[in-house]
Amino acid sequence: MTGSRSQDLVFTLYGDYLLGRERPVWVGSLITLLGALGVSPVATRTVLSRMTQKGWLAAERRGSRGYYGLTKRGRRLLETGRERIYHPPRRESWDGRWYLVAYSIPESGRHRRDALRVKLQWPGCGLLANGLWITPHDVRPELEEIASSLKVAKHLEVFRAEHLGYASTDQLVAECWDLAAINRRYAAFLDRWAPTLTHCAACRRAGAGVAEGQPGVPCLPPQACFVRRFELVHEYRAFPQEDPFLPAPLLPAGWKGHEAARVFDTCHAVLAEPAERYVREICDAGDVADAAPAA
Image 1 (tube, rainbow, N blue to C red):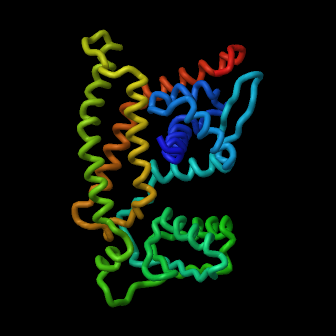
Image 2 (cartoon, rainbow, N blue to C red; image 1 turned 120 degrees about the vertical axis):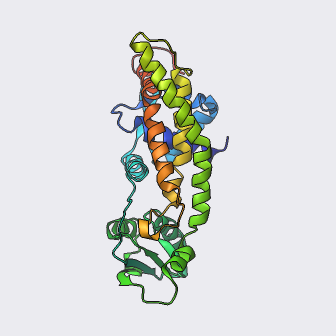
Image 3 (cartoon, one colour; image 1 turned 120 degrees about the horizontal axis):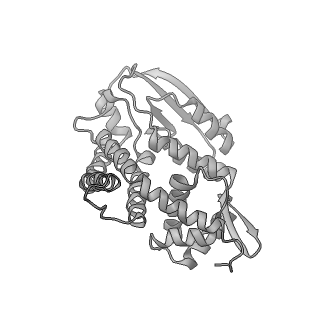
């Protein structure tokens, strides 16, 4: 498993399960949780060390044991990502106004220019022409943060405008965003997870029946529910990075983003109790085992 893949898994683990946890997590617990996802103990220790060096995680020692928690920078990144995954800016109407982002950064600042291009995609901007991006969203708050972090405010301008010609709105959207490709990925997501949702919902009802003295036993133990839910989140988390979440009037016919979001939200909730219980038990075991030998 590559280092970048391992880092993505750690981000997903902290973002979906450990973001609200006050105490750092014992490395042995992280090894167990990531081990369930196919990451070796050596790879886990390596990626945790690298993410600490990059400023995403903070390491601390308690006797002979190592613990890892999020830094302020890491927490801010995951809170922003979680908001966009679970509360995307979906709008049913649009006033026809566009926000234009123009920049001219000299070649000496190429690294900042490249970083700006990447960051502009996150709030839903699309490339219209060299140095000119557009979006139907009011992205001024996001742009202020981006400009400040990259120190490019003096090279950046923002306008609000109406499109007066000459391409149609559909042509303009198609030029700035590859919605067809995104829709195909949404369709593939639905093909995989819609049947899983049907199965897991029935499994959950069976589990509820056991609690009421009725027949039926859930088919997966908590660890397997954790793995399945983790795979769900890890796959879906790519969409907020590429979907501009355009208002309904700008979306093509047959858009599958809303159905994919429904399946994701429901499947995520159906698997929540056993998956979160599993993570909590693994982390709690690390909290009470400080006196044991280090992992």
